[in-house]
Length: 282
Image (cartoon, rainbow, N blue to C red; front, side):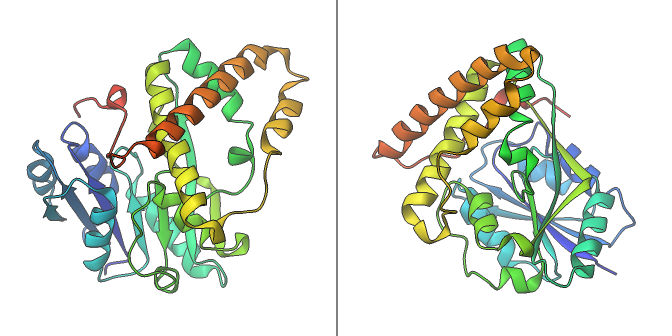
């Protein structure tokens, strides 16, 4: 009996898509309905996805994560539904357990396991993430950043996914804190960027997405401003071993904010971007 649906939007992900899908389907056959939406691909993403037994593949010509999310959502037959980025590593059993806990929770409408970032080979990037681990983002309940799961009533809270960069932030902000289930003992992993340049590029897109959502959906802003950095500084201050990392973190943050501003000012649409330093053939 199918317990949940998983939708994976994928654009030119032939290097890792099979590994992602096989991990998700590492459970008894039929428990997970897995849908891959290969969008605007110029490589063998769709073919490699079809090579994994039990996967439904939808192909769209347009390279757009949002279009892929909507196409996948339209194909959902069983709830809850988890939307999982193609570069995420998560076991199917984790998703099944997350679905069970979401079903047991009388209030929660959206849920996610805990994100763990795998270490980078770059010393600079490792220092950044040592400090990042102390940010409010990590120390308070968070849903998104690679995986979010919606029960049917949660999915009914909005129609189509809007054309925004930060779909995960959009989804999180739709729900009050007590409607979000952040499960600390279940986790998924993503690989940290291999270079400082790649980290700034990734964070620039995140910054652009945060700014865009604040501009286009001010009703979804939290109303809290300017307090996160000061709290982080207070956490780092008594730990001299993190002072160098705090400098790296601050520089990356400023560069990413500037990059995000430029991306939004550009007349060209923000394109699907990803960190190729974390893509290796699986």
